[in-house]
Length: 88
Image 1: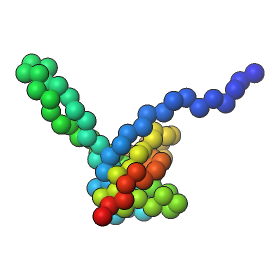
Image 2 (image 1 turned 180 degrees about the vertical axis):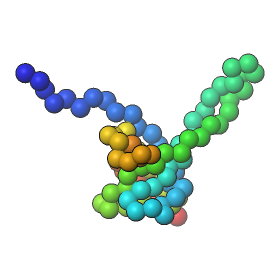
Image 3 (image 1 turned 45 degrees about the vertical axis):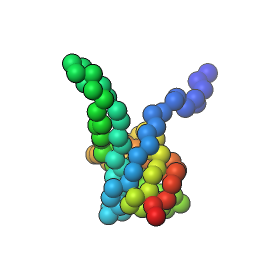
Image 4 (image 1 turned 30 degrees about the horizontal axis):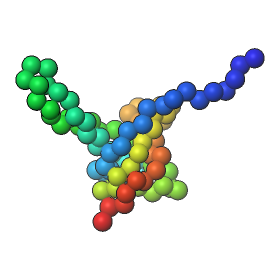
């Protein structure tokens, strides 16, 4: 007997910086890291391509939550789960 149990998936929060592609947005995620020698806290950022469903319709400037999913294309293995805050 095998159960279909969804394992915990990674989630990130970031800002949409591009929505020029069809059903895809680019999300910039920032994180804080400490320099190993100087112990200074620095900002680092990563850009993820995420699947943007029509029901969510995230636009440039929106703050969104993305979740890891199966590979959708060569570069896209995240999907937009919700829009936290709309751009003004």
